[in-house]
Length: 511
Image (cartoon, rainbow, N blue to C red; front, side, top):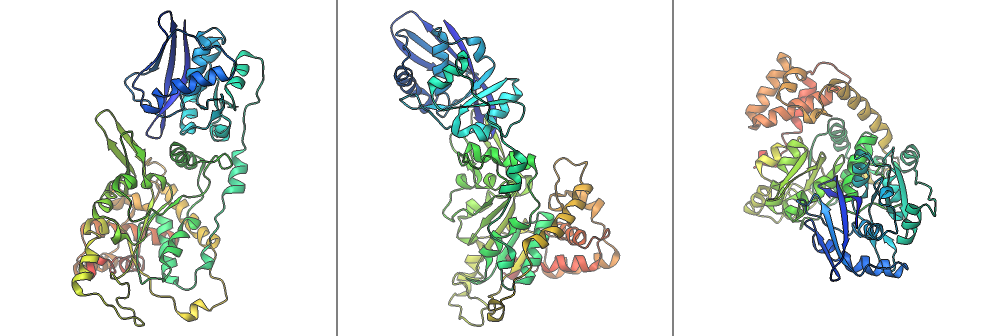
């Protein structure tokens, strides 16, 4: 007898409908799984057999063939355990296969029949809704995550026996529902604030510009000057996540298995700070079955690279594509996967290997050759893609001992929100542009028109600082953002002058 169960696979960060076909035929007892299953899927036969028996059902002593269609897509993970078990029970006549046609099924089985959580339930629930299914059976631990998807019944299952009772009509299970608006109200809060930062007012101003226009930042300063502290507070002044952005980012964390039942939806901008020993695949994504990397985990948020010269050079260079395109394409022989990766890059470095070059209180022990080698680890093309180059000096005792609090993140965020609202109106007809940093050449010609005084100032900066064409375009984008913060329609010389000062401190220019 043949039975079919609807399930799903994850390709990249998107769900792909998978039909689990189970055929029970006469012949010598055997259990074979076809349809490009990887190791964990092939091992499911032992978990399924034990779970069915331990739940009190008869396991058919016949030839069982399981096909995972489409058969040309590799299947991985343990989420096929539950659909295979239900397929066997349906083929045995215990379940009505027509009922199964209306529900998607996902879940790993334990040997006693318990249903364990699986990765990627959110994109699978989205795929089930797009396939027109009535509902989806998921592990109870993943139910709130799947319930983020509207217009589909999400049934949380704890055991195989419970799933059978529900599908046979012996037990009614109330669908899981969540209040998305309440989640945003209660969970969209940060634990840090800019009012905790003492001094560094010029750096705060630069980070406000970075948040307003989505610009990348390089901070150079001695140890203890507050570079990491400042970077961690950048998400607190970024615009609030919209639901579509939150859903897009949550899908990535769902695929990585980093969601909890308590927080089924990310409501704050992610902040990722990978260690400098990370590999290029860990940063950009990869693997035999490609997984998202740190750049995708930072999607719609901030990627912070502390002590950036300590990262391997090949690791830093792979950042070029996501910085330019807002996404990552990983090609394999069998498939090509696209991961979203639209983030603000914040890098931090010391002025030299010992960290005290130019510090009046400490002597630098580095030779010119050591300093040159250290700075050269950040290549010119990568530095060109960073809009703001900031010098972060050591904090003065006067600022540290000041008991008065600085400007809070909420006040800064109001100005950033106003500037982003202007940009949203400006780019409302452009699908892939959300802020000034993403403008292309045509947009620069249209929205970054300079008067004669501003042009003369920019020309002198190009000549004296030896800036590239890309650096010039970065200055135009920064000028546009500064003008938006000033609520000015036209860019004037003061906006261009402030933008230029954020380029003259680049490591490449000092060399």
